[in-house]
Length: 280
Length: 330
Image (cartoon, rainbow over all chains, first blue to last red; front, side):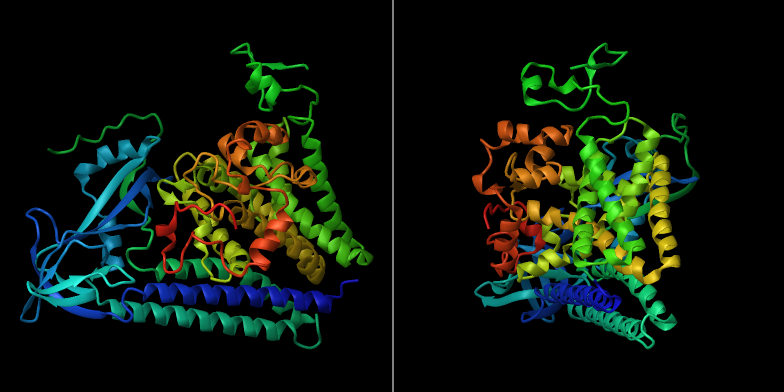
């Protein structure tokens, strides 16, 4: 016979093992987040020149596929690939020194909220064509380039060497050169604070549930409340941890979903598109 | 063999070819018309598995003497098989009647405490292509990266589960998916409603002897993604999946050990996968990806070997940077 006491211990053990796994994975994510910044120098400067005419100094490109979302108003839902970083190089002024940045493996960070804001932006002129494409099987294929241009303030994290041609930035042995418009150390500190707060709260909530579930009389009303909360905890903590993982990922490792919300009434299937053609 | 004929094309129709029929040029269309209830006689095995599982749950709920290790372990194992049936059923409905298939979805959803229809976007559409519009599979092996490999196996459902449900939610919010959403909501309501109802009458028995097996099966089927694809080359035609080819194992698992052929020809009925595996896959696949025993593989890979098989996700590599590297044997 499997007693309720034994099964209760088994259920709590499952809850605790999963909680510790979530905590362990979150700590690994934090370590990875800081891997390009920890132990390397971080310099702040202003982009002075790009190495080739017409190319930005660096950019983050986000490719997404848009499809028509259901609802009374026309909106396009986007699924996203992970962004791609590219560095064309140029010169960055750091204090009095002009630093040469060559085309090396890189990661480009921008403020995730600014990225999301720019991705949500569309013009009325591009909407009819975008809607047509989004209704097709292939969907609306859209790549948004977010460039870092001359005059932008940037942080660089990597290896900096004094050579005959001056100060040169390059990738460190373990990580690509990080080019960021936000302070990477402050960003990592914020994500660390969020993650640690979540983990502490998660453990405290589970400790409370464990206390309730094992309160005397065993399997009495308080204990029952603990049992119900335990199941709710199990079902909710996993999506919460996934949400946290997405929210605390590096800006170039996030998936940027989102919508274009037009506010126009949605077109019924088969109805012709009467929207005006795009303005040339 | 009696064949069903499509009235419009005047051709035999069906979805359960075998090698001999295919070689005769009619494999894709042949279907034995032997039952008015099920699409294929082999489906009764799946029906039997689910009924045994529900019987085990019912026995433990209603008969205190059945709440023992044997029944509990059997319920957990059959819950996993219930998820295997979900997989097969969502590829090819078991019953001829649409209504019966929808009801069966609900029953299966109760068995695993998640809506069976989730398999349509998560497995049939995304996993079978290994990506979602260029985005990695929601249950790709590289979503976990503990150094101690056993932890990857344990933690995998914690990440793959929510990613799958988030993806399904996004997919079902698109235009033209109203019927899918209705069915998904119905299955969710049935699964959680029936479980909740049982809990109202007997909370602890439900939590311990119904919910624990349900969750074991649901999480087990997610783990299969890791077991069958970790270290494989998803860009290869044959080496993208690991197969478990034991005969007894595949009888009870409804041929779900033959994963390569299932990916390459998702339209094949599960009952003939072993034939097509032998004909199409076995001669071409890396031999290490045809494992004789899943238990042996699990022991070697997750218990006796502390580290993840070399190559994939090498230390320091980002998960998405490691995609495409191939390590075939543990």
